[in-house]
Length: 447
Image 1 (cartoon, helix red, strand yellow):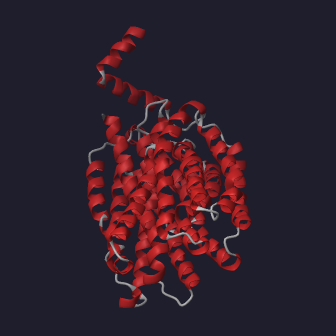
Image 2: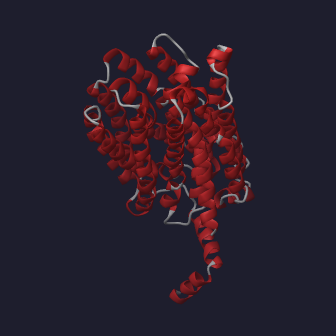
């Protein structure tokens, strides 16, 4: 029961954070280009709108430093409570913002500020949610536990895109643009209260508590992590770059690419995104479970190779008809990328010791996120100049994937070589066994 509570707490906040974050990504292509960044040239509106989308990614390393420091000094739980408030509060306020037609430049200015707050909060949320799960796991199930907070990405995006799809179907185009788009943002207030209630009932992780009790916390985690684990930070950045660019395209820019440059309707693009994310909900925990038996590294390499092979065929086939579009979205995002993402939290966290783990894990991951977050700006410029060129877009994706694949090959197999403290896991495992008399009896019999 204790494990269920911990996993639910790590997942609940992650769902809310990603619901809010991808809500903005969906609204960028559908709403903000018109209401907050109007221009006589639609391409310029899209470019400026995606610049603010990228700003949220750029702010994430700042959040990783702020909340990583807090998480390594004060505790994972305290840090995670604040990230929820920052993310949910900014999303709620976006739903109340006046438009450019009402207040002029003040509207996009406020939007960018709130987007930056979103990015800062998310920069601290991801790493904390992963550690809440993995540092509470018993030995042998860490990969599965680490995959559970990753479910927040597809669930949050499904909720976000579903809310937009539902509101869009219940309103006219004029009503949707006037007030309908605001409702999903305002709904964040309800979700955030629920997530805070769930997280308030959990305890600190065993590894952090041991470090704190023994006086082994790092005074300046960012200094210590760069002194002893600098190579691992750069390793994470490189490992994330390849699949990160593809992920941002498949989950955010695809709405603009499919509607503006290929000619699909908004409903078709949203449906393709929704079914691929729904597939991820099934894929992620299965792969997380398997990673405890065959290793994160093998799965990671297999996923990157699959993405390499499918990169150009994806861009060649999706303009042909919606069947190809739906199928390839499901395969690439729902299965292949989901397999990679399912292992990332555990894989990356196993590179760092507990006293700097929050900072190291978050900072490396969020630096990569900041880089790939500006992908939509690049793709908008390329599509405006060259159209939906499959070989141009596919080649760009392949370049990033090759870098990640090279680093993955030379990375340690963290299932066998890990910075997690085995004796802490054994203590935690013993506590669980004490809570379950049947297991104690079985252990005594075996002894």
